[in-house]
Length: 170
Image (cartoon, rainbow, N blue to C red; front, side):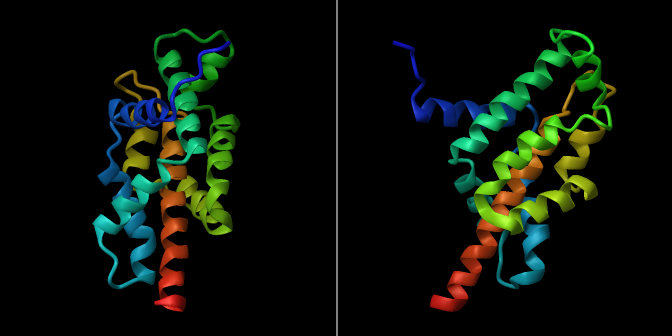
């Protein structure tokens, strides 16, 4: 019988990987705040960080974080075969697998999360921009910038739905 990791271990590994890669809950929460504050005058950064924490409990995101970050790390170490190594290491413009993995993890929170992800993928705000442009130190974030966008988009979608529910049901 295969050894299947406990859900707790997967969740902790995904969260640890974000931190190892320079991504904090607060940095993602800041993106969520920027996306949702225009629609909710009482929204706080803490609300946004709580939403980030909640979406990080979703297995789809955890698995995407683990797979994507592992590919980034293998590219940094030169441990992918060519031509994949060059494609991932350079974040080649026509390579869409990074967005495909992220978009798969975005579908949890509906069309608002999907459209928010599309916006974040183009606008590259906050930590997403830092990850997207950080190449001179040898780090590769081809997957991580899109994964952070997916987390922020999901947390934004979750908040939008919850804010609507509060309006409708008190």
